[in-house]
Amino acid sequence: MKPVNGSCELTLTGNERFFKDSEIIVSKTDLKGHITYANDVFLHIAGYTEQETIGKPHSIIRHPAMPRAVFKLLWDTISSGNEIFAYVINRAKNGDHYWVMAHVTPSYDPSGKMIAYHSSRRVPDRKIVEGTIIPLYQMLQDEENKHNNRKDGMNASVGLLLEILSGRNITYDEFILTL
Image 1 (cartoon, rainbow, N blue to C red):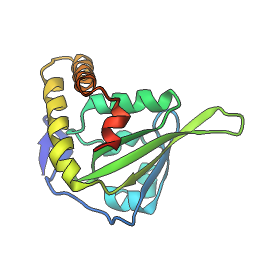
Image 2 (image 1 turned 60 degrees about the horizontal axis):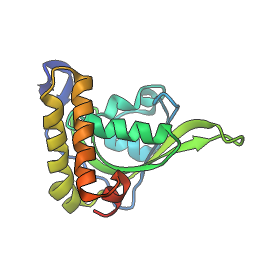
Image 3 (image 1 turned 180 degrees about the vertical axis):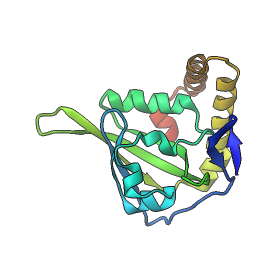
């Protein structure tokens, strides 16, 4: 395993994990992104036990190749009460990675107050991941890495993503759902 960004904690193996088309990875978080539920498929593919996940930030599975711009878009969307679909690369506990097509939605109590988030992830289309998503995410990461300040990099990457979408005259949701 090799360290990422000089850290001994975050390692990457370069090995990809896969799950079955019939399986769905499910997790739930509180409004701050701390895991409140993880199904067996989540635990198996991510390599964690339930005890290691409950109460922890969902970012424990964040892969460093995942553009911060996409996460910002995701959090902005769900925190405003809307659902989002997104391709995501995640990192397993041992440093392996796995791709998912995520559908993230806010959850509400009976009075209509937002109380949590729910994410269901399915096996993504490999042609889309390899032909569109990986090149796009690399472009966004390259933009983020041009900046010394992480926040500036993220904002520049968001700007680049919005410019790409504007050039196609589509929203992010339209882009993802028409791939």
